[in-house]
Image (cartoon, rainbow, N blue to C red; front, side, top):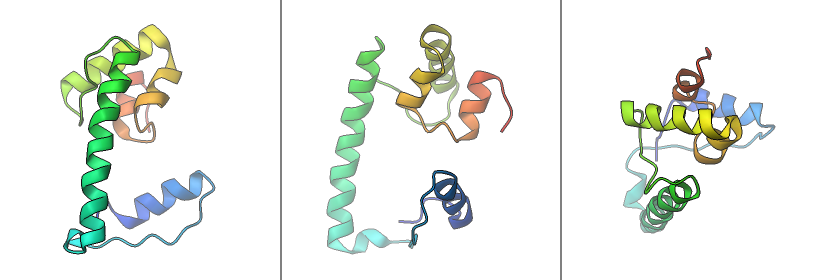
Length: 104
């Protein structure tokens, strides 16, 4: 599926030392294999949010970039340090910089 600007994703992968061919297209779930993978990935993600939250005393980690997400991120950062954010978030996103008070 097409998640973001390909240049942004490729740059992020290159920073991690990954040089891969990235193929994105809209309506990819029309392919039954992609649709099945999407269902399985979503279920795993939802379970991961619950399990990740429980590790830090939260019922479930929230999704997105809402004020609640940022508040919980700040609380995790203050209580457990930056390593906690690395365990539960995509730290290359702008929201992490907002949570820890730095600029991207």
